Image 1 (cartoon, one colour):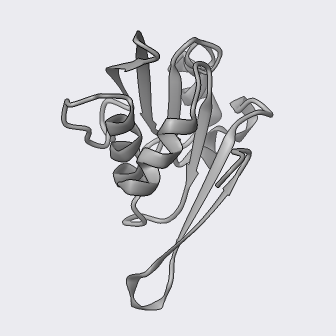
Image 2 (image 1 turned 180 degrees about the horizontal axis):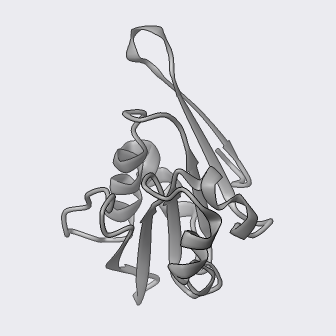
Length: 134
């Protein structure tokens, strides 16, 4: 949660965060932290069945939408295209995508990548690329 909040404080309008990691790595928990940093008080859950959840937040005293995308159940690139993900990726909100490797061809070059691995004993290791200062 704390790392997610720190990431969220550094994000700006139009940013895309690509989350990578196995089941149970903490991707949704990271999104909860990002949401908290944007003043979102609504309960954030993984949109595994709806695929995309939208949350209303604030940044610099202006409304901001956080798009939480979960591609776990997606198996083909065409399904991703049919979601209208390009519109979200090119919008004014912040987009965080779980299982982002499935959408690799759609991600902008400027995407921030967060790779989470689970080490022996359950400890998490996190590598972040594309976001300065972390």
